Length: 142
Image (tube, rainbow, N blue to C red; front, side, top):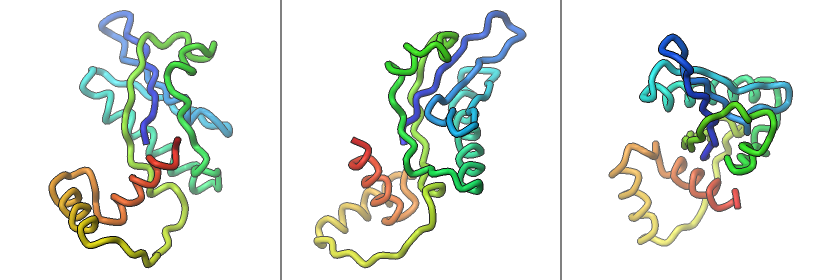
């Protein structure tokens, strides 16, 4: 899932980059972090998103209904006026979307071969199931 990330730029060399993920600032949760360098931002954001989603999932919060409204919406809100810039970070959240269920589906052979090639050629997908889950999330997020 793509998450909008607000970034507060450091004001001097002794400050870190402030990070906020508005889509996860809900249900009495806040999703904030910091990074010492620009290169650290993606890892720090992915870590804090994973921690917040894990806690939400364990607490019974409905993580399936999480929607990122987009930085254009968030940057207009008073709560995020301190953010100097915005980034999009793609994070696999399938592990936090509830119990997994095994299903039996029928897929044309050519399509299954293409899925397997895509899964094998990139480190982006863990398995066929992961590929299909990500594809379904993208299709249904519209």
